[in-house]
Amino acid sequence: MHRTRMLQGVMVISLAGLAAILALVSGSLTAQAHAAYKSSNPAENSVLKTAPTTVSITFVQKLDPQGLSITVYGNKGDVVSTGQAQISANDPYTATIAMKGDGSVIYRVDWNNVSAEDGDPTLGAFVFAVDASGTSDKVTPTQSATTAGASSGVSIWVAILAGVLGLVVGGAGTFFGLRARTLNKA
Image (tube, rainbow, N blue to C red):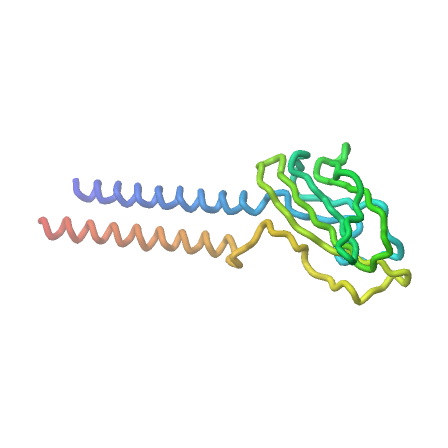
């Protein structure tokens, strides 16, 4: 009788722990999504021979037009983008804004958006250069400067393994603790 209750207790604790791990894993996968930067035209840290007339950014989730903003700045901090950012009629992941070059060597693109899929806001920035030679030492290749998807540096699989190990150790501790209590009562 006591052994059955012990096993039921261990099973309940194990199932509760497993449910907690699954909730954490699904939450961490969802939290990394957002409408983060995927690519752009011009590309991040690229060097163009002439200033473009538009800047397009593609994100990993569909965009909500209410939270969308793209601003392009020249060397001196002057705004060179014109009009409002628009979501592509053919691609709900891509937004474009018109711009006019002002002779700057470096242009910075700041963007804000809200995901139409999960409602989460994201922001970021990138630069590109303009030089008639098509080369420049003003930009260096780096990863996108987005604030979304910040990682703790721990792989999701390491977290899952740690959770499972915790369940096994906790379940075993509960089992042997209850067993010892049952033996002491006998």
